[in-house]
Image 1 (tube, one colour):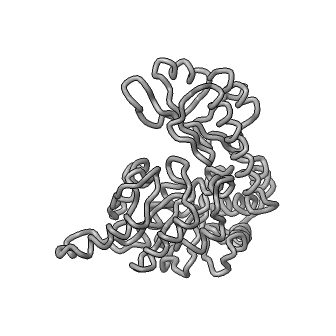
Image 2 (cartoon, one colour):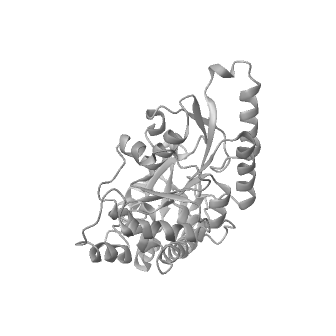
Image 3 (cartoon, helix red, strand yellow):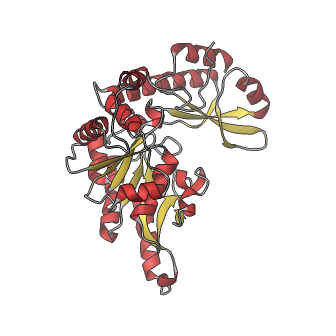
Length: 343
């Protein structure tokens, strides 16, 4: 029997179409390190989907690795990266960015989002300090779309952040580990083309979008670091069987598979919201994407999790806990029926 789990959006293996592509190409002998025809094909399809023919696309294995490599290769040793205190690189990546030698410069956000005015003030205050040469320079702005809390940047908000970054000549980097769910959200006014236009680098998450693993990094302003593959290998991130990533992303961007996966998960999330509302459970945060956050009494939670798996998010108070439920391509109607029964 399939375990009922809303723990995350990468709890299952690979989407059937992606798995089929891997099996169908399994016996082909291909060049390594991402120099095969499937990687080339996937890159062209991604550039077309972004309407950014000048983009430079590279494939990496996972989100933490991708964040650390992008930030550490694009910044100088005296620079740090601005991020919300709730940002993924701030909280849930075991200090991977700092381990690379780059400091995360945390500022307050709201609902997981950075505000352009606050970012501008932080940078202005830095340069107004007479001792700034003794401090870590703000060299990049990091955001995620969607945020850790499933909230979305609007096009207007992204344009404002992009404007600040251009003013101070620093890159805007968008973590897109769950970008598929932001793009498919019915409340989003941001497209893949907007992401390419308004950021300097972003990535399209595959791990959380039906791939076994993989993230597609898109450098949008002819700004890929020099000798990038050399730098990736030096950081232990170069996959010898690069075909594994190319085949998967080639399948994702064929026949609208990427969009179909995102749309399906958002439809399941809409049904999930209805079930939660009918149950009387209180939302900690109602997200327009595939992640929902609800409050459980501690005494109820243990028994509930014996039937349905969810993720611990944070303590709400001494007697309550916030948990996260996520939908994906693998969420079924049966899963939702069981959840409804147990809530």
